[in-house]
Image (cartoon, rainbow, N blue to C red):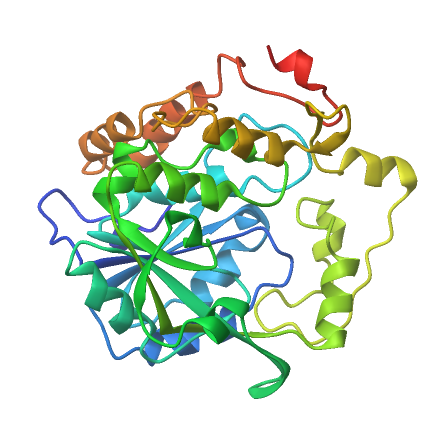
Length: 356
C-alpha cells in the first residue's frame, strides 16, 4: 500500500486552500511532464494538487520523486478499495478517493494527458468566488502546440463568451464544483465504474438539482495533442490500464516517447470489455447509458445508487485519524470495509433483470 508522505497531510487546523486540483489516472503513459510544467506556470497559486494513481504500487516512488520540489502542496494517493472487480478503470472510485482527502473550497478536475492553460486556475477561481460550478473548454492539437484541423471543441465554437449552461456540461476533463456540493450529493456514482462515459454528467446533474448554477467559460482551457499517431497509440492501449505489470516494463511513465503496442487474446479482450445491459428496446447497450436514463426517470434523486458509504462521514473519520503517526493505515482499513454489501455490484455481460 502506498502511504502519503507526512508533509502532504498536515495536522488539524492546517489552512484550507482555495482550490483542490484533481487528476486521476490508470494510464500507463500519462503526461505528468506537461501537467507539472503547466501547474508551475499558473498565475493563480492558492491551490493544492491531488494525484490519484491506479498504478501507484508500480511507479509511486518515481512519481513522488518527479513532483518532489514543486512549489505547491502535492498529495499522491492510490485508488481507494473499489467494489468494481472487472478489468476496466474505476474513474468514479478514483474521484471519490480525492474527495475524501481534498482540502480546497472548490474542486477542479482535469485529465491525465493535457497541458493546463496559464490562466486555467485563475478562471476557475474567478467563478468559484461567485459560488458557481465551472465548465471549461479544450483545444486539440496535431503537434505540440500547433492548432491543426481539430481545433477547439464544439461548444467553444458556438459559445464565444462565458454564459450559464446546463449542469450536463460539467465534463470531467475540465470542470470545477464547490466541495460542499460534491459532499451533498455523496460524490460520484461508483456504479458507473467498469464502463466509459457519462459518469461526469450524472455527477453534474445531481449537483444541478441542488440549485447550483453552472457557467461555461470558453477561456478556461486545457490543451491536448491528438495527432493520428497519438490516437493510434491510445487505441492500442485502450485495454492496458489495469493489465499485467509486464506492460510497465521498459516504459518511461513520466516522459513517454516510445511506441508500445498491447496485443491481447480474444478471451482477454472479452474480459476487459465494458459492462453491457439489455435496455427497454430489447437491445444490448453500454450499461452507463441505462444508468443515466434511470437518473432522468428519478428527478428528485440526489445521491448515487452505487456508493455504499457516506462521503461526509468518511471525511470526518479521516480528520480524526490524520494527526496520528499511523493514521492513514488505520483509515485505509475503514475504506476497505466499505466494499460490502454487494447490492449494486455487477460483472461484464450482466443483464438488466439481474440488477433487480
